[in-house]
Every structure is written in C-alpha cells, then in structure tokens.
Image 1 (spheres, rainbow, N blue to C red):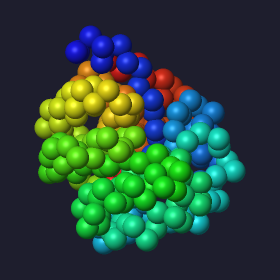
Image 2: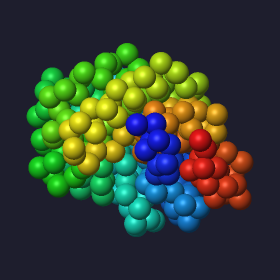
Image 3: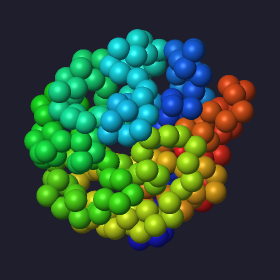
Image 4: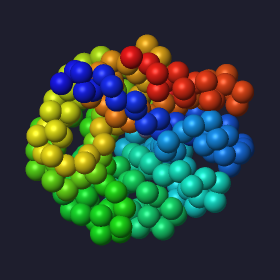
Length: 226
Ligand code: DX5
Ligand code: ZN
C-alpha cells in the first residue's frame, strides 16, 4: 500500500489565491511555464466561507492564458445555480462541498451533465463516509487540510488518516479518481500527503513563495517531497 503511494509523483495544482491579483493573467502564464499541472481557482462567496474572491468572469478572462486544466474549487452556497457559469467560463474540473446544497448527488450529476469532471470536497470535520454513495459518480475527491476560506493556514494533521481511508475506498472502487489535498501543503507536509495516498497537491503559499523567479523550483520541490 505504502510502497505504491510512495512512488507517486503528485500533480501540483497551484492556488492562484496566492498570486498577485493585479496581474493574474501573467501569474497564470508564469506558473504554467514553471511546471504547474493544473491551475487551482478558489471561489469564495463571503457566506459559505468568510472570504470573498473571484467569480466566473475572472475565470473566463484567464482561460486564454493557459491550456492547463482549470481546477475550480467552489466554496459558495447555494452552489447549483453557478455550475453552468463556471462550465461556460472554461472550467475542466468543478469541485463542490456537500454542505453547499441540499442534494450533493444531484449536484455531481449536474456537473457531469455539463461535460465537466466532478469533484467533492470534504472539510476537516466532514467524514470520509460522506463519499460512500458518491464514489461511483465522481472524478476527484478533495480533502481540505485546513478549514476553507484563507490561504496560508496550518495543515491539520488528522486529515492524513482521512486521506488514507479515501485512498483505500478509491482503490477498492477500481475507478480512476484523483485524490487531492488542499490547505497548508508545503515541503514539510507534502510528503506525508503523498505517502497517505494523495496524487494531486494544491499549494498556494508554497507555489508562489518568493515571486516568479522561484516558481519552478517551488513546484519541483513539492513534486520531490517525500
Ligand atoms: C482554502 C483554499 C486553498 C488555499 C490553499 O480555502 O481552498 O486552496 O488557498 O492555500 P495554502 O496552500 O496557502 O494553504
Ligand atoms: Zn482550494
């Protein structure tokens, strides 16, 4: 189990929450060129989480700046009414929280009906068993290793057990489902995430630290962390 996971080189999905918002298009180009596998976009509504960020208009404006997948993390409630707008804006993966609407299975179906990959995000207090009846219909699980709302928070270690449990459930399902970790992922925590079974790491602070001259080294170091 551990042997297989330990060999995984994770995909890195830098969160543009830590980029310079005044020059977001350039930042996306630079982080793409530095080796980002996906571009993680944190959408917050000031209601589901205590912070406000960006909407589908910004996603649409960024779309011409990269061909990398847009990994859209929706922290908005109710979420269903915005799925179409993010799909139209150029999302590739749309990830939602079960707490952001009354019918998570229906929401997942709606994302797939739009032709997009569907992800489910679990907050630190949300158990892995939430996925029991979703696993056949999703393309990604996002484990939040901080409470959603802000970049730069400390990794909550208890989430490693949840990553391990979800890795077992994914392997048992036999389906191709990404297991992504989001929050406080840096050189001290990335290795433990990969060993626990994650194959995609979101990193905001750790990707953008030090400015553009450091992006490639930041991403390479995250990929190599064990
Ligand atoms: C938190 C967001 C994360 C966050 C990650 O609500 O979902 O993507 O920006 O930031 P870092 O990597 O700085 O913890
Ligand atoms: Zn996120």
